[in-house]
Length: 538
Image (cartoon, rainbow, N blue to C red; front, top):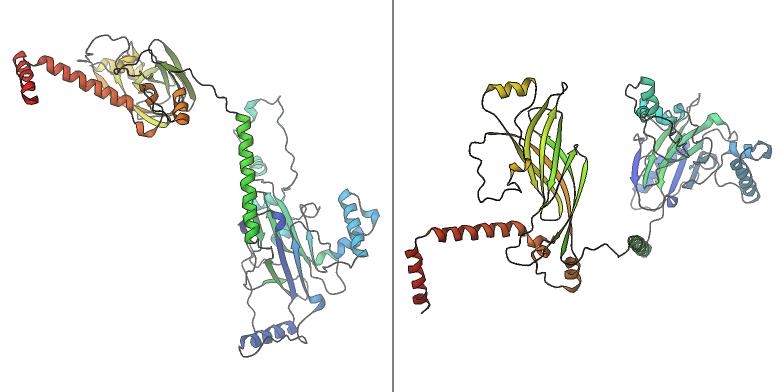
């Protein structure tokens, strides 16, 4: 008749979207005696026989003080015999909570009395909940595995989980003292502790002999329930869920054995209640959405008719594969008639806003997007400056998020003198005009020749860009479903438009090459082709 026990006494973590106040736990303790063991064994044998009905062995079942079953709600206060005797005396009540317990105990005594004898609770408001010593929490009688607590467990055991003191930082403290660059062991032990605000509830048991209840040395921690208010519930030990009961062995000479069973007794929501709750949440979210829309409003700033507003928020993410470290970047954005110089740090955001207006509409009209020219430099410990590379970035023609990697190069001089100068004292060949990496804006000729210009490929720079395009035609097309006609409007951000600017540029280049080819042909070939056209049409 050996009995099996449940030895898994660790924490069980649950997540629930329901309110924690609906949590109900059924707790049952039973003292193991020779009569109880024989009764359980015979009861199992009778229930295993299919030809007989359930037989209750009332003569052998232990009743009275050796067994108790109670359903406990979240933060429901059940008084122990010790608390009843303590709070009955009004002179012993010092705090408002003590006086509240005094009134509740008087009301219970006037009524039918307590519904519990051995099982009681310590709620999150009780002084005992946050004053449990580490020895009590980790050496509870339910636990069967003997292990020493970790450093984190020791630190967390002394942390108060409610109404923590949030100290504000004094304005007189310098910012250099916020970070401790040389922490000591005592500082690490006192500061590096995860301290989440948790609500705690302990379910206790008075395992003293009958007639001698109310002694503190006979109290035993049966279960602990914690929640952080965001749907996470921690239960120790876990619910039995049909498995064997937990084994409790008391201290002392007798070494009495008790059974502990924990079950989730929360009421399951019906289908109608669940649907009604979903409708309520949906209505709540819609109301909150309408409230946010009312705060934002509908009167957005719109550009005038025929003007495209271009906004760009970007950052320089990284620079890779350069010869030297300690890099920084100078860059400027080139517009048709203006430019600006900016010194940038990595991961430091920059913003840009421009307005494009088309004065006349023709088939050769192509918007000229801004270009970002950048120069990568390095500065070492000996204050030696070196040019690491030049590059450019054409602003995206499509709105949205873009991650662009630009490759760079730098001019080099032939011979070893320039290489030695660059290595020992810094400095190297530089461009007078950074826009030379592309077609300069000041170039007015037909062909830009770089013949004989020596360069060396260096590293790459990665940009992260967020682009926004705004035009009144976009809103008109969405509301009135009108077809956009201008090239500027076609660059509005719909994915089916594609890279319209690139397509127009490619078409213009092909059209120009066709015209050049026609001009290079002999005149007799052109005249013969013109004579063949009437014959073919006939």
